[in-house]
Image (cartoon, rainbow over all chains, first blue to last red; front, side, top):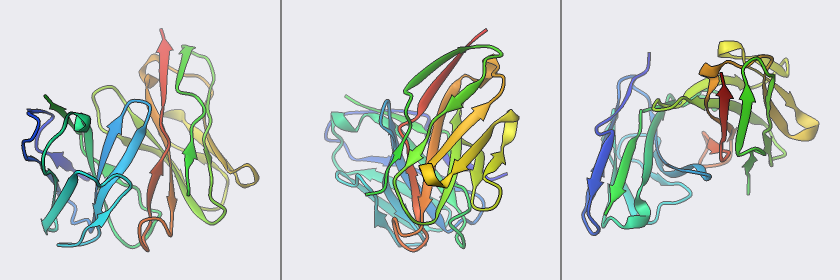
Length: 114
Length: 117
C-alpha cells in the first residue's frame, strides 16, 4: 500500500511565523500535491510538483511556497503565517504516466494560526 | 473554468435507506471521474473511478456510480446505507489540460453523509 506521511497531525503557530509542513511518500511517485481543506469549500490545490525541483502553482498559491529537493519529500512553506491560513492541509501523491491514476492522500495536518 | 458541483451539503439518512449523491462537472472533453470518501479522522480514500467503457462502475463497500455523459453527471449510489458509511464524500474530475499535461484533480465541495442507527 502507498503510504503518504505528513509530519504532524496538529500544529499551532503564531501569526508572522514561518511554518513548514512536511510530506513524505514511499512509492517513488513523481507527482505530489498540497491541498487545503476547509468546511464547505472542499479541497483546493495550493501547489503541485511533477518532479524533483519542479513546482507549479495551483488555484490558491498566495502566501505559500513549496520545496521538492528529493523525490519522496514535498514541503509546504507558509512564509509569514496569518490567521486565514488556519486550515486542514492535505498532501497527496500519484505516479506519472496517466491521468487515470488516482491520488493517494496523507492523514492531513490541522494547522491553527493564533 | 472547469468546475465540479455537488448538490447536497449534508445528507441525513436512516440505516437501510438508499443513497444517491449528485455530482455534475463542467467540461466538454474527455474526463476521468473519481469519488473519494473521508471517514471521520481518516485520510481520503478512493471509493471508485471511471475512465471509459461501462458507465456503471462499482467500487468498494457496495458503492456504485453512473456516468451520464449527456448530463455531465457522475452520481454516487448505494442501495442500503449503514451507520459506518457516515463520512464526507468528494467527487473529483481529472481534466487533461488542467494543471499541465498530466492534469490535476478538481474537487467538488463535498457532501457530508450522516447515517442514523
